[in-house]
Image 1 (cartoon, rainbow, N blue to C red):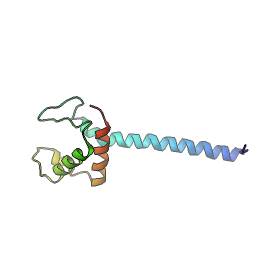
Image 2: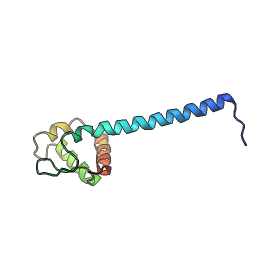
Image 3: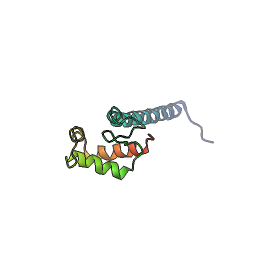
Image 4: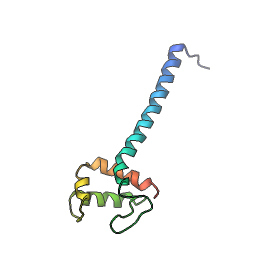
Amino acid sequence: MIKLNKTMKLLIAISVLLFSFSQITMAEEDAALIAPCSSCHIENSDTASMPKIWGQKKSKLITMMKSFQKNTIENTIMHRIMKGYNDKEIREMAKLISKKEG
């Protein structure tokens, strides 16, 4: 059995806490990234004007978001919204939206 002194125990405790906080922060960042979607794309809603996005395939979501970004799909607002995101953010949003039930 390894004997740890007080300093080592303290370092281990701090490391565990920092790791825990980083995981919470990542979850909060994920939630913040897709929060704007929830204001219009209400869960369990699927209409012609507001299609269901939650739980869709990641590849489909990426294609749609990039099409809106390039304004190749006519839409009154999505092309303006998607211009504010880069490719990395679009991929991350698609991953998160695809995993969320709705």
